[in-house]
Length: 270
Image (cartoon, rainbow, N blue to C red; front, side, top):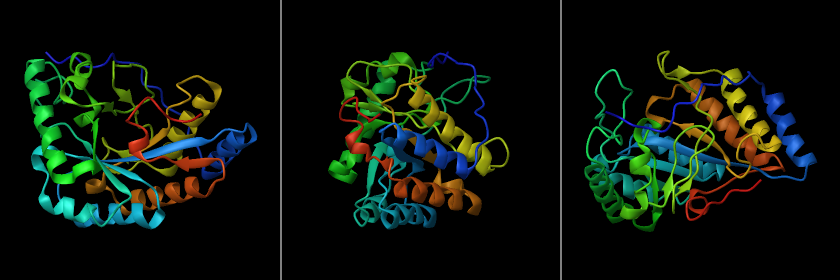
């Protein structure tokens, strides 16, 4: 049986435009606030053309990228590639990105279909492997595959040296000694051919989270997280990502935060 965080009703954010995003960021500026963002990209294992493109985009835009790497699949060539891209840090993407949940449950690697001790042992081995490959670039932060993790596992992450946790959606749950920093903007339509979700829906997620933070409806200190997946992005998704990176980077009230400032302690700026 898989146990994950409590299921909350899915709220579909209103659609938005680039003008709406500008207006929301201007509202932050008018309030004397800094709209913070961070960027996570999932499912890395080896240096592919898409991975090289993503790392290069991070460097050319001077926007820090947190790359979620699957430890069991991680190649040594990836470490060599990242050595040339100082704007990229590494997060731990589970152990092997294998589903252990029995149908009809949703896919989950870090649930309770296995003993929690076994799950934690794999995570500990994954942490050691990433440290060997990437050194201090590998942050002690976990990205659960499919953004799902049993609370019983999450609550024990500190036992295996993991001090950060990142899933999807505004953070609600907290765990002792673990900094939770989630993502909120996913521009991929996973149930529709993994195509680009579209500007209106993607920007709607960004504007909705920023507005909710500014009003205090969600945690005001959690930066708005962009989630990308380099292996499946089409041209439109790449173009949207590049434009969003640039838009935030050049607005006086917005800034991109590096992951190493987020997962050492419960941080973030309102």
